[in-house]
Length: 287
Image (cartoon, rainbow, N blue to C red):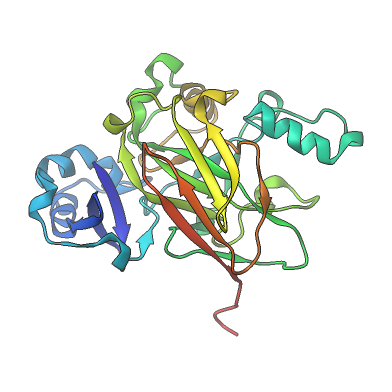
């Protein structure tokens, strides 16, 4: 199934070009669920929800093009991200600063966290701050954790997955700490929806592309990951307890590039679905 959140926190199942509204079913299941201190209730109860939904096509639908897509996960306890996890991206960043030395790879750097407040869905768009600085896109394959776990072995890692989606790890370049520059409001785009793990048999065999205003930027494949999906889950769980709804950005492939207000980013991934994200200039809602 392909679960989405849309409009004013409604839940849907995407079938073709339509969204079938299953909000009432989700609410009914969650009403009888045990409260959680950490994690997303919908993801924690995904199996029960899927069973209750059954054939999603029987529910009322809307054209997908008519709704505003939100992040498919509403309440992750943390956004975990992998830096420098494609050799080609390491090389392209090193080429920008040839005198800076080889730099650290993921083996030396480990993982980092993005602020939850940076999270948005594709329909909300990216709101670029610091127009005098370089802001770039990084389209990434994303893992959604389905159940609580700590110190998870690699051979069991996929048992802890709820599903997968695409993500934009937006970045303002500079000398500040990585998580500081990547945690700006709207700089963690997740979507367009979550494909449950049964739809993607091997997450390490997924091609995806990104276009900016129709021009190809990323042409990537998860089989090029330095740390594959299982290894990323295992590494994260060595340091953190993973909770339902926690997400892992698997890393940026080669082809990162600048964005500015007015740009349109379009992702293609046959295993998940297409995603369109518009870029705007940030405006303070309080003036």
